[in-house]
Image (cartoon, helix red, strand yellow):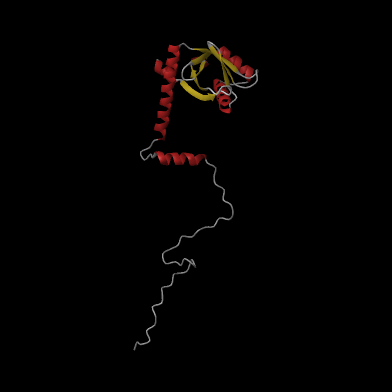
Length: 197
């Protein structure tokens, strides 16, 4: 049962708080009937909230969202663009997903130390499982870390634009002249024998 709980958890993103430069890892846990748990941790403490179907439907109406995926995508975008920040209170925290008061915010309760340790442990193992799964998907019998890295990095680089005309280089065949390509190299003269009878 605990393993299923761990398997349904997914890491959303990391957040560098714009106010005090603290780092957090956000995660979600999808439950049956469209219910979702959202939490974040700084590695020591864990804050978490349960979003029931009612709360989610209110959020969907207020912020024109269509699904829980839209909601988690909004959190991810706010974290990546640096608009999200956290306000820590004594036993809770508020996650703000924008600079304006009307922007989406979420209240989360602080877990006890033992509950927090279990959440961090589950999250750590889930991340390790995800990395292992990515590793096994990319691995092949002739896998070379250097080659795989070069291939992946080349995929995301822009194509190089050629400046000026493109000149086709013809392969030089053995015996062809270097100075005048397309003609055969002449053999050095051996001389003429005038004394022959």
